[in-house]
Length: 313
Image (cartoon, rainbow, N blue to C red; front, side):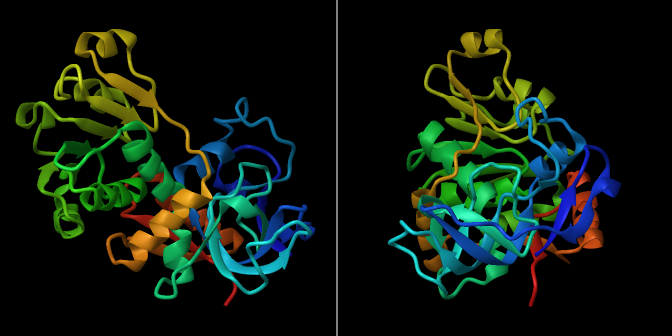
């Protein structure tokens, strides 16, 4: 099958289109014929070698952690899925990712794609949507009526976080650049902050939940506006200073996504109800050049929504 791989760490020029062996389904796995995958910042961070201690894998590595497509084959112990089912998933983290024509997925990580949702829309969801879900609900314990601040709301994770927070009945505040104001308001943001011209620390106070996708000064300054004693700050990029956490007396979590088929099914239900949609900023083909260009776009940190890769017809 066709795949885009890396054989060593480095820049985008290390991406290589080649033929690799087809995956073989274990007892509790299915083989998905891919129709689409998507790009996440972890893809190029891994390509550069930033995660090699955490993931000490052998080469070649196929990057990619989102898949949408049709089941082509089921393992011997699979009972809930059949050939032809339209599914999407955030597969387990292995060196055999989703920049390929076929991929193996554990059966408990799959979810059905609603009939009204395209493969591209579905492929944008798993990693970013589950990250937002787990940050807001598993760790943030976000409740109706609470105030949440979502940093960088126009990004892949941010666009899902805004919609999930609204679906919960929260008051949603988000930062982005002025050009993305209309998009964020259309997703349900109650209070928009133009981060280039406005300082959120001068505008906000007593925020119940803060979702940090930026780290650095943004994370540090978030402690100035979080509600003392009961507030929660969740970051997907950095640890916070212990002193800051103790002084504010708040809960802080730096989280790493756990693939979860049940939560993905709940996201699918919200999509079917029209409460959550994928914002796709750009689409590229599965090819050496397509993945190269997609990584280049992701590395700018200014992509709006998700970058999707179409696989085959």
